[in-house]
Image (cartoon, rainbow, N blue to C red; front, side, top):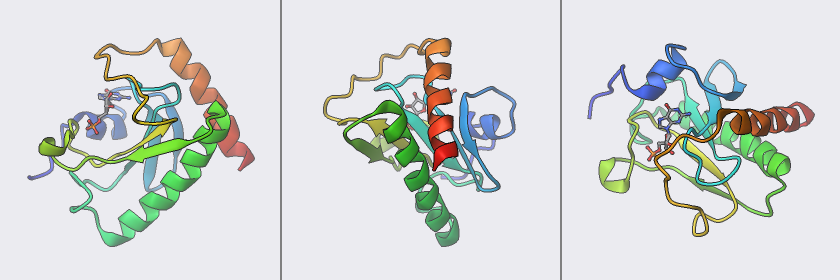
Length: 140
Ligand code: 5GP
């Protein structure tokens, strides 16, 4: 599948549509999932244009997992979750809906997570959690 430069995360990277950001550096952006499956549900994306893990360069993959480790630690502390689930879907057949590779950071168990509500979470609530995550990152 060729990369669609108009996918929603590409637009977020170009700041054409907003996101609630928790982390950004030269290679990575992390932001709150708009339809969280648990409080603190965060997405981490590389800036490299890649549909899925198999399109990502090895260097970008290595960098991405290190950023996921960093941000997941901050999400864990900020939400005081006892456990954190990471997941990353490759291809529509696996359930991937946005064709730009992303890791999900989900406080708690994926088995206990509510199903996609298909409604956007309250923006103020997301902002509050994002502030806590940014503070936890600043402490790390
Ligand atoms: P996937 O099913 O592709 O692994 O996950 C895509 C995720 O992106 C979903 O959890 C969905 O809630 C989230 N999402 C879709 N559109 C947007 C958006 O415009 N902004 C944000 N912040 N998240 C989105």
